[in-house]
Picture 1 (cartoon, rainbow, N blue to C red):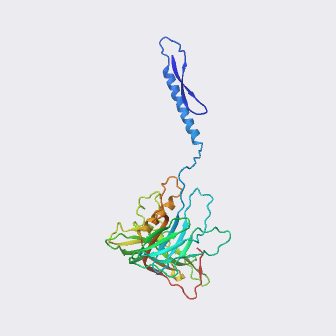
Picture 2 (picture 1 turned 180 degrees about the vertical axis):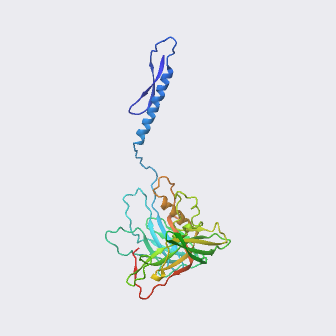
Picture 3 (picture 1 turned 60 degrees about the horizontal axis):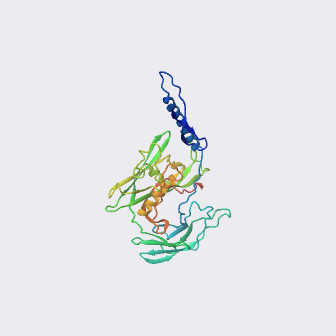
Length: 379
């Protein structure tokens, strides 16, 4: 009787079938055991599969990239603000396969600014400040206006021509600012001797239009370091530091809408504190800001100077900051989908955007005070 036998090729790890002659003894009352052959075949097959998986898991195979090369492009970054001279940063993109890549200052670009279609100015290149001879060359080249600041009600076009690249450009206009005010402040005990500063920042979204915002909060504060209960020592210094208090808005649902669902901390954070009026069209809204550990002892001449700003930004700038935030937090993560960074540049990459802002301030303590020693902290 012909019985199929499994032959395992030890090099190629392939399963082949070969028909061989095999004589089965005729025993009265018993049938030649094909069941035994089938069981053996299954065991051998399973063993081969397991070995193949183990060998495959322990091997690496380098696959050469045969796709099209990514063409380098001009990169433009321009953020227009009222009362600031127009400036543009110029650089160039490069392929990840371009190794080595040498950054350079692009000092021969032509950077033009148009207002409502008319040439306003050709910007001048500004050389970077002298750096240590071992410091790498900055790939970002600055071009600045001498006299022109953007004005409301006009469309600005930034056009950049780098030798060897097609002309790249982007357009924008200044958005109108939205009034904001500090509606309330309070200090609360959160336990273990810690206190929390609470600030309510109120504004009304303009109706019948789409609005895009960014919250920022530059601050200066002074701290006196002493044990609790110790009196003020004029020989001790109050240390001053510059800080950014924008993070206080992360507890607000319009800044972090998914915070209650993110129990494992896997959602990207809103690193640039941008939001839209999609949930508050034409309505009044109060941002709730929280700062843990803020307890200024004014008897020791500690102080706070904070500016809470509501920036009105263009839609293009909103999309750029939102996508760049997610890109930065997922880059290099093999489990995350690639995130493209938004651009509004024709024939290039980057962003031409604009903002305006209104602000309200918070002052705690007196500063400066005659006779008090102050020292700036380096961080």
